[in-house]
Length: 173
Length: 294
Image 1: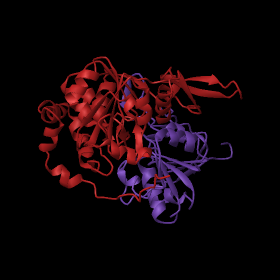
Image 2: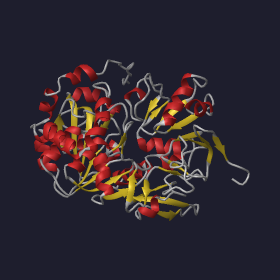
Image 3: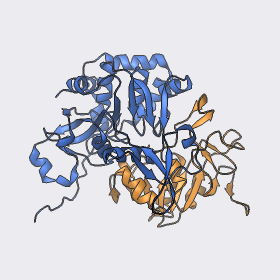
Image 4: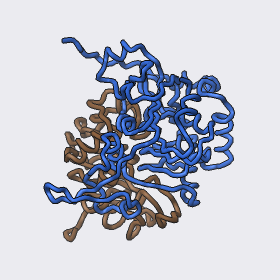
């Protein structure tokens, strides 16, 4: 799944890297077919070349040897909102048939069954890049008909990559 | 000033408190001192509550949490946070990262709100009525808005500062500059106190000027288990260990007894863990240097 996800990235593209599986896939692409892939992390590292697999998106290895480190106001305004990001790459606790992602809550927001971490940058990463990809393991629990909470809207998602197959939009959108 | 004195003087019950630092430079030393001094009814604000707010929530410091991503980075859940939320015991005000960044930017500029192109199609505005929208007077476009965040007190951990509080940070910068400028009071905690000449030798690296700083505290390893670029690595083993500790309220209470309540200060915390330096001290990678001459 991670290998298939990594092949979605083209050499030279600018990709906004989400936490978890996208982080793995982007780093795999950088080390295989896309050595000129520009990895941008919401933590402010631009053109990161981590010499170890970053444990989190704020890992110090993202800074050492990177092209640029900027504050988070610059990441979100000057890169993301400005339209400079070609690919947004997200994971998701729950993904529905419309490619909406839920990383906020299982059950109701007011009385949660399971409280998940929340958006982080995922709300805006699903809105601004030119092409949006999701990678997530599929199961009845993680791919419900409708997510309990829309953290990241699915309207602009191009592909959902899972361990059983890759979903794309049909003609009806 | 000692951290004990800085917290006693500048952090009060009921305050809106920010301890910022995105994975990098999180002042666990200040968080632990606030727990030791048993501050209560705090509104805790941070993009990523991280282990430090999980500990402060468990210790009973928090009334409310304002945040955008509440996980254990690279590991999983923050279990004290989850217990509090799933048990209905913690008030939440939730944004995305961009929303929180925009709130600090508005606060730092002393504007009432910030506009951003965000939230269309998400459920966040439905559960947070403070996310609103405004019609652009020039284009007619509808833009999302978030209110300014002006904390009572912000704590920033940094690599170095001079005695006046001119503070230099490198590596990930997070939103520390905006948070500090938005705040009424600012406590700076540093790895090293340096002479003013060191600051003046590289002024582009100064993120926070002395003019907005209330107190400067020197606390080596004060960000552990988070990290300080060029000083020590993130203690990923501890972040992993926190999963089991935070899952079990009794284990969490034992942790707080041993590493927070049971010791007087950060120096003791480091003395009782002599293996940290060997395991985490950063190796040198020094930059090329720049010419500031004219």
